[in-house]
Amino acid sequence: MKIILVRPQPSPLTIGLQHLMIVEPLELEVLAALASPEDELLIVDMILEKQPLEYFLRDFRPELFCTTGYITHLPVMMDYCRKAKAALPNVKTVVGGVHVEKFPEDIDSPDVDFRVVRNATRAFPQLLDHLKYGAPFPAGVLRPGEAHRPQLLPPYDFYFPLPRRELTARYRHKYFYVFHDKVALMKTAFGCPYQCNFCFCRKITDDHYFARPLEDVLEELFSIREKEVYIVDDDFLLSPKRVAAFINMLKAHNIRKRYLVYGRADFIIRYPELIREFRAVGLRTVIVGLESFDDEELEHYNKHSSRDINERAMKVLNRYGVDCYAAVITAPNWDAGHFQRAGDKMLELGIKFVNLQPLTPLKGTGIEVPDEHLAIRHDDYARWDLAHVAIRPEKMSLREYYAQILHLYERIVFNPANMLSLAVRHPLRMQWKLAKGIRRVRQQYLKRIEEASSYAEDITHTSHTV
Ligand code: SF4
Image (cartoon, rainbow, N blue to C red; front, side, top):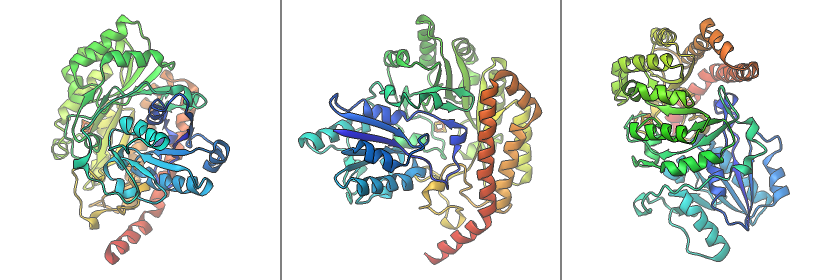
């Protein structure tokens, strides 16, 4: 069977961080690993391709068209399936991804033949067998119009084959994550046992947590050619025992790579020795969800952390020369003073790179916001990107709020001490690439500032008339 696996290009309405990071489509490489040897496979990364989708459809003429993405990709995935059907009327289309798994009704269409809603690594090969040999239709896949009944789905199964990274060979030199150039992606665990109420990650697995055996992780690590490895577990720094075993494994096998991982501030202060040891075998950056420097806000987000923990974690990372890419939430009740104080604190703590995330009541998280307080329509999927302001600011206009976000970014990125520190530690080529990326993201924000008033009026009107 000829199978095309397509990574979608984000919509122009999405504030896309692809100017600062483009990573390999690991999920498609995993699906490809589940096909049979006689299947013919093509992975197309539409973020990097210059040709339109139709070119690949005409040229490869797939019998099966697969695409996966997040909530922001829904309109694009729908459009791709429509185009695939228009170009090749007999093609079957499959969509998947974390949003589709939880809310398949958002992409229910005659153009989408199959929606994968549970255990994709089990359901996908079963679907192939069904299409090829008439094997039973897999549980965990929905046909058009079929209702989602989570209670009838099979239990979670986190089977994970060795990804077919050779299928993205022609793109791999272009994958990067901020200062991590030519980066490979790895997933060693699924889910997160914490309960932060703004977080969709933990909801994807319905609060189940599963970690792959380290022998599996080692085998995969040996197969990765890149020096830079981005471990995309929701929280890699979770079990001190597992992190210590991972470090020992790297030492025992003399594996010399550089790692970017997610970790919580409380782990960092509880196990500074592990951070020091991990640094010695390649830990370069930790993405830390600091979220806030205010205890009341942290409590409100159910983060089980504190301002003091955040500050001490930054000291540990700075002490051992580990970079921190901080994630900070801006709340709808912030005024100019809040933005100013957050910036002061980040500079005081030596934060050089931050992702500012306006509090977003993403479908499926625990945050409930009345419709009239929303600044994005529910079905305007492309804008649910965790960068758009999703809840109407309480103390300033939408326009001013975006301007405050942009100003806060600029304070951190263009801070002379930060610029100097980055300049001496990273190659000129990466600095240039990042500078261009920052300029593109800045333009996106300026556009949002420009359209903020008319969009806000537009959605007010819509919510009154519906
Ligand atoms: S924010 Fe991080 S720690 Fe909290 S639930 Fe999500 S992944 Fe877990």
